[in-house]
Image (cartoon, rainbow, N blue to C red; front, side, top):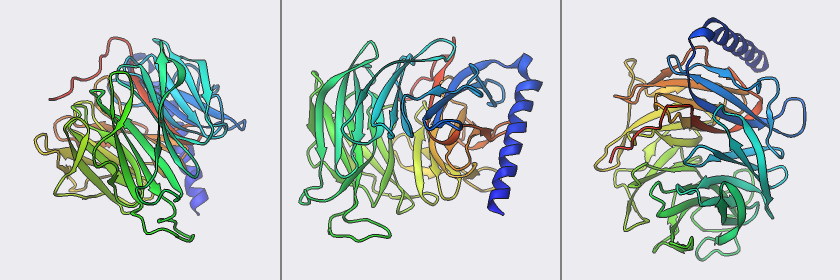
Length: 405
């Protein structure tokens, strides 16, 4: 029954995408390009598709013939993508061959494979410094490492700093990295891990350590990474994603195992302080988080529920509160198992999720006054198989939104 339902959804999505592209082609104005990375349907490699965002409806259509000819991701099983602040360079982490691949992005959203590096272990997540001078990678299949690579004109250089992410007092535990992010002001970088020796559903545990942690590092003028005092900080059971607001004042982390979001205020550069009213309830198995470019709203994708929840941020305290639609609900349905989420930067009016088991992208219109979202025309939009990563760049004369301070 479930397979039949998924097949019907895929058919409906394909028809919807074709109708949207055909009926409104003459009126379409592209404001962003959405890049989705997943597994290629016809080969064993990874694939990247490019979608164009319609300014009026938020509907997606294939761009640059990537609906039938996706761009090779440079490896297999792509899991993370990051774009630099100039929107001219994109980086893709492929777990199948432990590679980080650099693509250049032209004005029409075309990708060109430029260069790559191969890691000693499995990459998990990426982030680019606001200055475009460094790329941050967390990797590891039994131990967690944060590496900083130099960037020159977008090209990936050598490792310039590296930090082992071990649990204090439990150096021998199996620690797995989950996410990394850089502050918008460039002052610091944060990475999350969980201790598999202490949290291992279906398996044995051998450690009494707290399972979830977030590490904080100050970024020096020469790129040196200095651990923040009191780092790492406890972060639930299995932190799955994290994001810093555009004003670099607050940090939010989703806890996949506890169905909650943990909030921190940022002080003294990179130090973290728990928001006293937290943690905050999410849906089941929150897997991804993003903040709109204005710094007003948080959006959390819940993989088990196949939903997105929206929250308004108190700009004084950083405390999030659920936004409610006229129906009284803060939950919005996606296709099956959303594992990545992003707000488009050109106008900050649309939110998109990459749905791993739905083989699709779900789109939502964002009410810029309330933060409430509603489904876009013809959503969900079919993609390559098992999409795991999303990145969005503005197109043409559409500039990204100004951050509220």
